[in-house]
Image (cartoon, rainbow, N blue to C red; front, top):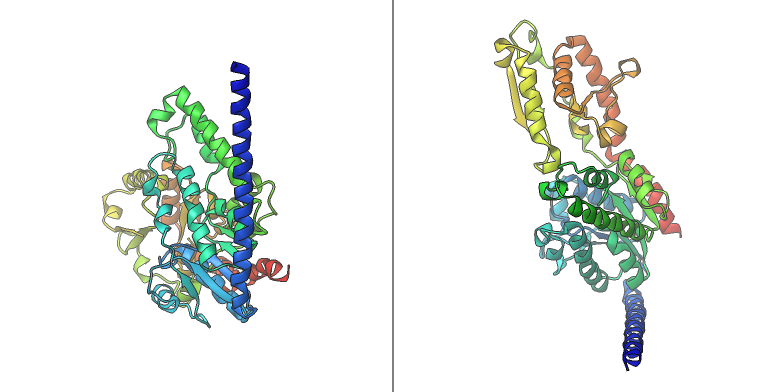
Length: 419
């Protein structure tokens, strides 16, 4: 009787599995038919839809979105542009002009997402990566049902929705990645037991919890790579992100390097001379240090404060009174500021050159001592050396202009339009 019971349970389980598979396939087929039927009402105008739930925010990601839309409207005026997200009742023209001063040629349809709150990390205090990945699925399903796309573009890092958008709508898919959801550094931090923003003390001090979190991270990284393989075109905003995606998304198409658009034009008319700096070494004049960075744990503002304290201790009381710190790298370079950035990511690989013989455009540092030494080096530059560095930095900043972004973005996107 026991054998028959086990056999019956196994058969029942297999039957449920086949039923679930049949339901999923039927739902997917019905969804594709529905999306195809809806698209016929677009008067043969292809629909390019961007998944950007917080399109009314004012960050760099939103500037990428609207510059990309402007570029598409210039090159493909016959295309209908849709943005999934935003506040109900706010027009795209209002958003763009209020935040960025960008002029778009045609109205953009903004589809308000009722389920957008499922993307909030506050809902997932534990297993945040997994929670947001799963939470994005119903939001993306809502998006493609509300306005079926011909081309679906994820511009906010929700790669797990790419296979779903492809399955439900049959749309071609693309993504512009600002920062990978998971990185090899995050996995290595857990493996080495290092206390970090993604590795709490209770986990770092427990061999069992460390092992479990490693399994979780590695499984998540594998799933992330599979999700990315659903994209027809992948664009990365920096060499650092491009290299990580090439490793994590090994089954996907090679990522294209498309630098984000920075509003450098607004700074090019600013004078490079700084009259207030004259006489700094003699104890009069004024030099300002401006600190720019989001207040997130991984930004490590404490390191910056310690480095600045170390730097001030080496200056003496006279110079201390002449230093101003204001909380606040491409715009700074265009404006003529001398940049000191962290020796990692975009600043290291794409933005800042520190080799004097090749024409330095700024400085890089990674720890308390190197930051302090770099500050001292900057403060010891002569006026002529500062002017020469500023000119080189401004020329370097032009590679991140709106025009350069539009050119490289359209080169990649044209592969979708022509396929």
